Image (cartoon, rainbow, N blue to C red; front, side):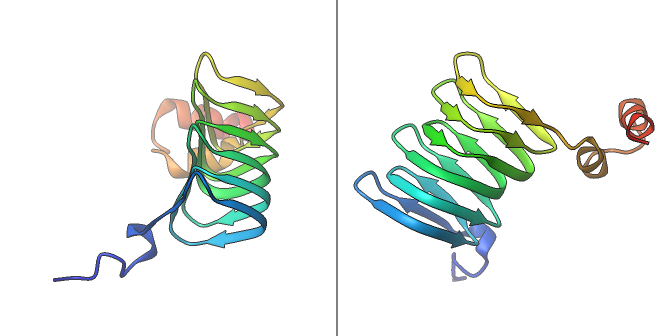
Length: 135
């Protein structure tokens, strides 16, 4: 039987609801935050701030999903999703950003079109138009 934790992409860490962490957090597996974090988070995979999670930190990750409370700037290499239960105060920067109706969001949005078109089908008319506009 193969070890289910043999690659960082297949691991998930959960920071439980009673956990309180202050400082710099670095990780290489998927992370679910249900507790409270203050400081900074740098991550190479997906981070989800669950509904009960409270984060006062700048977050940098591949993909960021916000369902709970975040105060800080978010930067993702792929996408940021702000769910209807989210409360976010800070700026977001990613090639793809979605904000669901009902989310409480106070901040700015920056989307890097060049990164997004590089990761999608560059033969589509929409991607070609985005490439042309970026130049």
